[in-house]
Image (tube, rainbow, N blue to C red; front, top):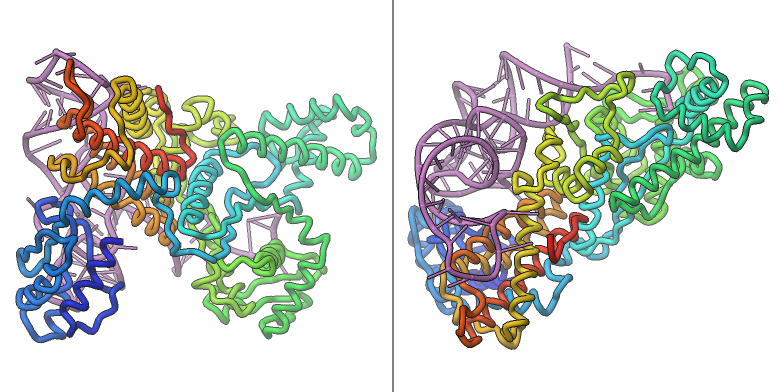
Length: 545
RNA sequence: GCCCCCGUAGCUCAGGGGAUAGAGCACUGCCCUCCGGAGGCAGGUGCACAGGUUCGAAUCCUGUCGGGGGCGCCA
């Protein structure tokens, strides 16, 4: 906004530069003494222009000073250009926030782009564990962030309801129901017993069926129950999917045949020793992949391929996959698959690899062992620390860094836990605005006078608010929702600082005056922005806590 | 053997080439005459190592060391 005006202004003012506006580096300096914006453009241009950075900076400075909104331009250090805006321009963001309300922060950088965001995609053979939980939080937040950047986003869950694992699942439940030993490599968890009990209560006759029919019956009943549980748990967690996509549906329809035909037409299929292969090595994969085994069965890879092509068929421009670190081997073949189908893997596919989450409780790491029964489920984590704390904590770190969750810390209702720090700021503003109403302090755009905001804390807070749309934009572009979390923490800090130094409401017998109204309006804009950020993360913004 | 991720403060982690590298926790000391002290202010320690690219590197490239994860006509 203001930033782009400035870069264009500097261009026309300086005329000679042969750069596009987007390329002009313009940032908010870490040090506020360096103004509202700073640019290192003169340093970058020095070589090609054959002038010293300071000479170029002087030229640009002249152009910038002609712009009304700019009150001061300084050249510092080796040639940085530091720009300070005038008061009303600094304050303009408040009017913008209050006009746009919950839409403040939305940008259009991804307008018109259809994105399929697939995450979690667990087998329906057990509860969702900690790894799934990270994705449940981050995936949902990322979807919101992408939507805020203008994209048309579909949240999709791929149900792996086909293959050996499903039969093992059925056999395991049946074994418990019959009171016999479970299969060697079957499912050992306690929840299998619960499923067996539930199914037996409704269908005692299942145990009398011939073995393979019996396994199938238990498998299907267990599948339905387990899937429903996953849906309920996610619903309770605040993560809602638009589409639950069954792998079976791929095989039921003509999707597989279509994908094979498509790949064949592109010329990357070949036969070897009775199997059908896809030559993914043409596009950087480390080995070719089998689609149809020599026995005629389709591989899991065939499903993945058909699934990807099905998504493209459904009109998605970009397919984002969120995978666990243990699946990073898929990236190469997934991108190669897209290339084999004639797509551009650098654009049409985006794979996020999530590192694993460790969990500490009572000072020791909980080892996630299914056998030892210490597997932490999404449900258990929420029961321990609550939805807001769980979601927020999982989101505030980039997914490619391994993280450690300290349960004891998350249980504390103190600002050891950043979610409370942010929520507290929101609740504090809400309380203050309730008081403002009682005291007869009017606030809103019509009562806002930016010329009155002269305190350093006020300027910093205004500067913080102005950054929000850019945070949303970069967060979407980089697929990093944690940036939103870090931003609202920063904003909360700015607010608390402002609050302690700048009295908002009248004291004692004091009459309400424009400064009270102006500051209260600034508070309201801050509250709105924090609320918008929390909303993207799927975390509540309490009025009281 | 090959591939991926990570290495920043005592701990958990931010830092998409830029000026003096940050936050929370932990430790010390201040700030309650009035808006929510779940807050603010002050105090000190760090980019694993070595090269390279650049006017400029925690950031990009290469290598070494250290930690985690992965390799299948499995799902």
